[in-house]
Amino acid sequence: DAGGNTVTTYNVTAGQIIFFPRNTLHWIKNVGAEDCFFLLFFTTHEELQTLDVDDAFFSTPEDIAARSLKPQGGVGFIRTFQKQEEDQAVNLPPNLAELVQNTQYEQSADPLVWRYFFNLKGSTEFRFPGGIIQWARYVKDGKGLKPNERIYSEFLHSKEDTLTLGTLRIYSNGLRQPHFHFNANEMGYVISGCGKVGVIVSPALTTDFTIGVGDVVFFPTGTQHYIKSTCDEDLLFILAFSTRDQLETLDMDDYFHATADHILAQLFFKKQEEFKKIPRFNEDQAINLP
Image (cartoon, rainbow, N blue to C red; front, side):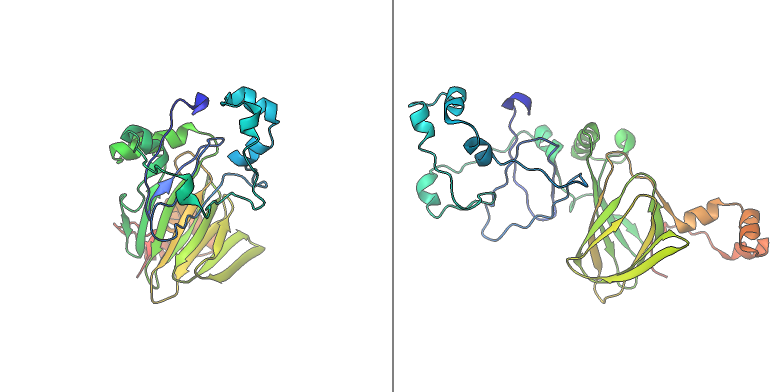
């Protein structure tokens, strides 16, 4: 935090979310036996600007760094630091065992950790006929959230330009029915499975395309879109929405039922009683599997 008085350290594993507010100094170290893979989302549509600690250090005049850090030996000590030829953004020195004697990390207090950490894999599953959605998001008044989730939710909402995240699992042949979001752009990354996506921008601009593992999809705010799972296995996405507020979404079946049938009859040149053939279901059909 500001002043460097509060440092938060914690462990994470697969299926969990880490959150770094803008201009928060942070580092990530792999402490396991296998590679650690992160999918990262950043809240900018401009070129990402990043400054690493070593780059900032070597860009600082030696006398200024010495006056700031006040090391034993002064400027002479500062000059013992050698800039590496290769970019050290992701670092693994060949002589690491010689350099580091103590790698013990103390887990910070839970209320502090929960501001920057969310166990998405262990969160509430919102089940639909055709799939499952899980959320890491802000919820007004914290309704339905566990104490740790409430801390994350409120901290997320307190920062500018943050993200709502979620996972979307669509069963084979399931359909995330046509819908749009009032207050966020949406991006999605395909983790497993395959599918078909449709996007309706305007009467003159519609498109559909197939997707598979590693693909990214993008839906601007207010763009109606749908996703269908076309493989034998589930189609699994991780989704990011560009809002710190509660996400607002409208599905096609909901806006059809919310529109008076006489208005629909006039709009579609179809008899009013015909619209009684569109059923209402007790179970939310956001992910549909007839």
